[in-house]
Image (cartoon, rainbow, N blue to C red; front, side, top):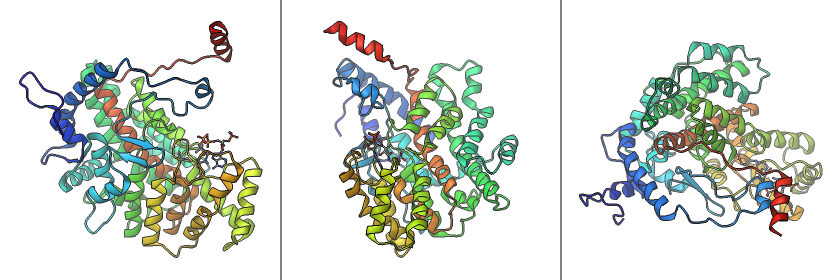
Length: 464
Ligand code: CMX
């Protein structure tokens, strides 16, 4: 990569940033925070240059329809961790899911990427070494304990309170010990915001398994929570807290699951909400709790619960091993009843979600004969044609949520209401990575302009 930016000493400082951004590996013997401290001044210069060169250029017209239409396609945000292409799907810092599966460090004997490595990649654009990933696992284990009062909040929740509401409550309450909130009260300089934001983000990710595990055990009566083992990776510990730590295939599934659910560029509801709330300088716990509340909606993360609910209802109505004809009739009945087919369609994607494909490949390897997996496959052969024929959905293909529940349920995690909590644990990785950069780059308060219908009419009347 040619050097783009030069210092007064004509030293090509861009080259190390370019190295960080384009298929590079992390320099050895640095921690994530040390590496960030090196990259931040380079990225500040880079953003300055991009704004100087392109800041006044237009991205094209804004249509009134976009204001009414959920801002689809409106270029409005900076999000560095990942970019979503309508046809190709997600790339994390330029890398596809199969590339991440190949390049990121794995657990001994494992085949799936460790989410620790994915987080390093999201934050720096670099692939970390095995040692750096092990250090992250240890660091997160050391930060994993949750305050006693947060445990009490969870223990006092009625089991009928949805796990996502419990999750959001607990994450909000973590703000009690926020390093950023404290530093802000102590008058920290803007230039230093990223340091306490980094600490909070690391604490946030580290504490989520204990929160998720406690909710799972409380709600489903699964007994006492075991301790986090600093010698194990994040996904292994999460699996243990849920009661599946002895099942190596489940642990591998968690590694893949967290990796592929971590980030999906910035415009989706959970990512954008986290960034929006963070822009008010609400700390990462408050910002991410807001993300969780968005993820809990049935058109977004809750869809993975909805898929399993829908499949179960289907099985009780038309039986297991139903014919294609019976499934088709059930899908049409769903649409005619004014409901969506959960797990299908997407606001950006126009092809099968590569996150769906990654899960299908995992299933083909680990559970090819599972009846629910076979049903998911049968539905894949039926639903897109029906959605096309119905003529409304712009994308008839499956998204990530069409598959995840079938995998979890295969290993005995059958409590569908809990599924979005696992999506939430994963989504913290992407939201946290961007929050760190937003504070490092001094991202301003978000404040787009809204219009009333009356105002829009007036604008065009006056122009006529
Ligand atoms: N079943 C039935 N109708 C669907 C549909 C589906 N799976 N997907 C889209 N449509 C409908 C929309 O409801 C909309 O109908 P109206 O015009 O009556 O409002 C029409 O088709 C056009 O929608 P679109 O432009 O194709 O899709 P949107 O960008 O508006 O919405 C999404 C995207 C995901 C909300 C939608 O496809 C959907 O509701 N899918 C089912 C829920 C789901 O799986 N969500 C998870 C998405 C991934 C995630 O965030 O986790």
